[in-house]
Amino acid sequence: MFVKSARIQKAVALINGLDSSKFPLLLTRILQKLHLKEEIFTKEESAKLQISLSVDQEQLKLILQTLTFIFQQAAYHLAKPAVLTQQLQLLDINGEKISTIAQAWISNAKTVIDKLKKKTIAPKQLSNVNWELRLQSAQSSMSKLKNPIGLVEIILDSNEKVEKLQMEFSHKELYSFYNQLETVQSQLDALR
Image (cartoon, helix red, strand yellow):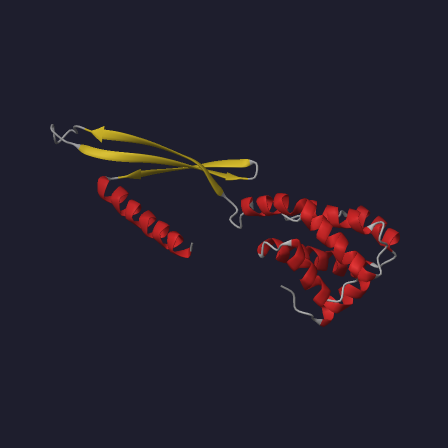
């Protein structure tokens, strides 16, 4: 799961030197914010944390990035605690810190993985689809006309904003769109 690079070795030395009484709280905060795209700590909290952990800003940044990476990899690989422990031992993290990381993972793994599954890389998500069928039965030049028109409204949700996308399809256009969706579905099924 991890490659023993110079940067990780530097981070491991810093992690091994952290106060063991404050370490579990740091891990809990990282696990709570892992699924979000925001910073783990505000600037004010980071300043207090630097003093509390006796590290500078760059060292704190390296520690947070490394611990976040460890938990992201554990989530990606759905790592069991024993496997995570074994992988952390290969990085030369001391035993006490490894057991604290493993315990934090045991306590939070299910919640973290569930939250990460819901996270998307797309800025907008489909929240609902409404549809309606209309039939044009006549027009000024033709008295007996049967022209079906499908109206589709796609509702997209992006954080607090809801957008409605409305489309009108003839029978031929709707059938073509349906076939394209079927192709996408078959490709998604092939990935499983």
